[in-house]
Structure formats: C-alpha cells, structure tokens
Length: 173
Ligand SMILES: [Fe+2]
View 1 (tube, rainbow, N blue to C red):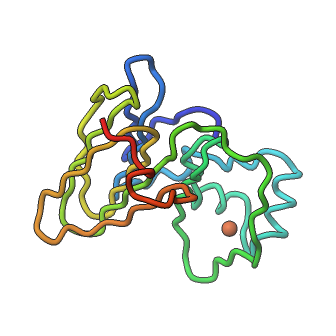
View 2: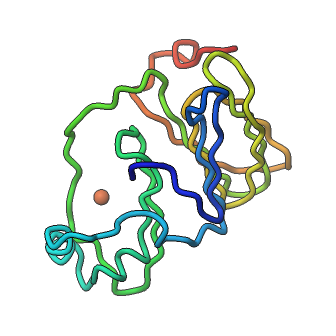
View 3: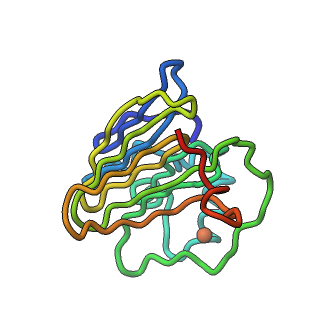
C-alpha cells in the first residue's frame, strides 16, 4: 500500500506534525476493494494464478486488503474468503530490514473492552481509542493500555527481538 486509504471501519491517528501514530481497523471493516491488491498488470495476474488455487483477479481484489504501507515492519492483511479458497504452501523471504526506530505493536481485542492512549514518542498524547471485540490497533510509537471490563482478553503482537528484560524492552514516559 502506498498511501493511507479512507474507508469505513478504518481510522488513523496522527501526530501534530502529520506523521501516523496508529492505524485502527474496526471489527465491522468490510471494504476490501478499497485497498490493494488492484492487480492491474498481466504480470500480477499471472503470479496470482500460480500462487492461489482457484482464485481469479476479481475475487482476489474483493477478498484481500493490504492495510499497511509496504515499508512497515508489521504487515496487516485482511481476508474474507469462502471454502475452497487456498493459499498454496510458501514462506516469506527477508528482503529489506525495516528502518523504524520504534518497535511497532498490534493489539487485538478478543473480548471485553479496552482503551488505548496513543502517544508520540516525545510523549504527546494524540488520542484515546476504545477497542471492542474484533477491533485492532497498530501502534507506531507510544501507547497506554487500560482495561475497562472484567475479563478483557486481547492479543498483543510486537516486533522482536525481545530484549533480555522488561526494563530494556520499554521506554516509559
Ligand atoms: Fe504467507
């Protein structure tokens, strides 16, 4: 994905200077066609036919959304597919290593409710984002996490490698 795309169920949190601090994807996101792959070239279509069983470009375009800029270290792809759709066996090669200076983190709310404070790494508070089940936030820089309901469950995914201690892992404001 090159730029940021406006769509229902997608929100961006920005710093004062305009840089992106967070991407929020709500559980009701359904606008797959607004995001790549657009599959405009013959080459892209030919690769698609090889890599996916039974996929045609139009279906691919409507059922897969690349949500994140290509240079991001964590790539979020939303899928919406029916039985019979198969991604053929593969692995992912390292090409370029990311150049970000803060390790990115994703939080996915599984149940309950949680509030994410989004901060610039300088400490400025940009927004509070409440997550309900199925909501996801990708955080580029600072964050505060508050659990609002008993038994709130979430999945946290962040870039590694994890430093040896929790103290070395975080910079507290
Ligand atoms: Fe894969």
